[in-house]
Image (cartoon, rainbow, N blue to C red; front, top):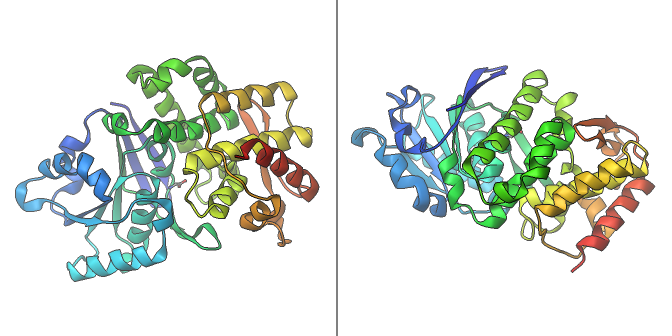
Length: 361
Ligand code: GLY
């Protein structure tokens, strides 16, 4: 059972990856003699909740707080509701919040933990591939505003992450593929061996072959762990993890978080970022072609119709003149990327137009 330890400003936290972890989680020493609160969705509770609750001694079972499923519910009003529920239940500073679910649950529970009584502990129990390889690690927590994704949040690392790989069997094909796009991203920006694995083992990966999948998951987690250890608060290197996310987040927001799963939006965003990398001569056509082919091979990506101006407006980069507004993450070869400032709007527009042409229904 691979365990990775991640250093953060608030201490070291273990990330444990393995099969059937949830069914023994309640016996872990981290849960002992603390009031635990399980935050999850009705669907995820239906799939994994009973096994998890049964792993606790009867008198110590966590109280369950349910939230509706979907990125459109990652909002401050849900955080306020959950905080009130915790207060009504008498939760104090020793409360331990358990986030059981995908990235939305992880981000919201982490944010609630960051601000409830000025900070309580949180353990991430990610059940989607995307949450296991990305959202549960790194300590960024938060919610969306109508103006954009993750605009309110905080850095609040979990005290532990337990990624039960058995839960991946319950994912729909679409959800599973969406998570793989974050793995492809990690290969493109930092790990050519992971990229080659994704390129050469597509059939086995899509068939969820446990051995190959464990290699993909642990390599992706390692990429993220190393980067966030070196740059926890995203002042430099950590920005590379946003490859495909600038335009990806804009698509999600412009489509009101309804048409694309996060990973799918990142996949479209990566296609645009690869195009932008070629347009600005940072990346060879050959490497861009290879990377784009792998992204498309893990599709199909849902189509949609938007105008370039809508995407630019949703990215918040149509009218702002700060340095950050013209900053993009570009690939320089398979396995490397860089942050590029002062990106000309004309090239960004061109890359978005090409993307929208391909995405058109
Ligand atoms: N929680 C996701 C991250 O820190 O990147």
